[in-house]
Length: 295
Image (cartoon, rainbow, N blue to C red; front, side, top):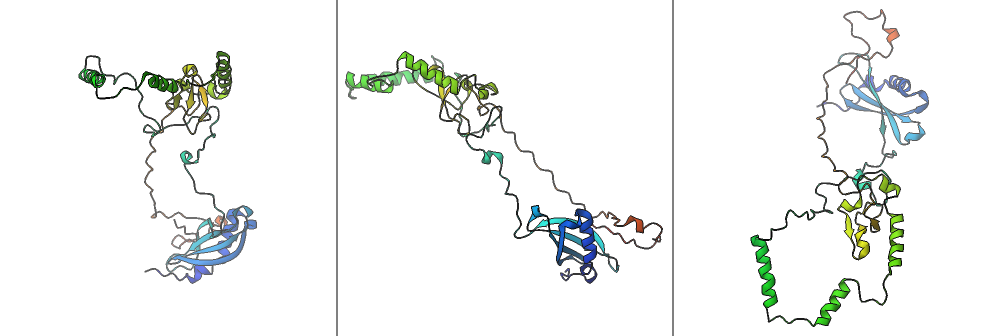
């Protein structure tokens, strides 16, 4: 079991650690010595106060070490580490969780997952049963049986007409005239039409978007309601010619790549010369050098 008592020679190498930190980052950012901690046998980390105003609560950590039976202490590394009261950047949040309604601008694209729960397959005519198929014939027989059922009490004609009128939006004292319809269409086209900057930079128009909610009446032939909560016109009337980067088919989010496996090479010794000018002609071939790097 390795001892956690700091090595005496490494613990006394405060000036060596300070000199290494000052050479790496400058003397003006290295403050008082805060302490020494044993990392392993003959490996000690010295900490110094960081005087940089941008890193309040951080400290410089300088690790020194010495070889077995050697008296020379060498430098391992100099790093800047956060303390308990350090100011840290907020935790990274994926863009899909940071995005909020109204964040999109002209030219932006909002990808949608292939299995987006807000969308479902639309009717294309391929799943329509043939007129002479067994499914179509069974449906026609059900309609005939329902009409021939005499036990079901039929509603009065006036009640049926009133229900249809309410469904069509009738039954009101006054409705929009043709002029009123044109004025409304002009306002909507100006706000969310084909000539807006958003539509000009959109990859496709709303007429082919899965988020478009149809509306009834004559205006439903050219307008609908946007149902994309992240779109710039969510809940508003949009022209079929309008468009934005939130189009349901604009882009599909690709699968994230698998990260490569982390490889740590702890067997290579990298010599680190702190003072090359002191080594020229002063080291014998069989004598250990003063600079011994550890990785």
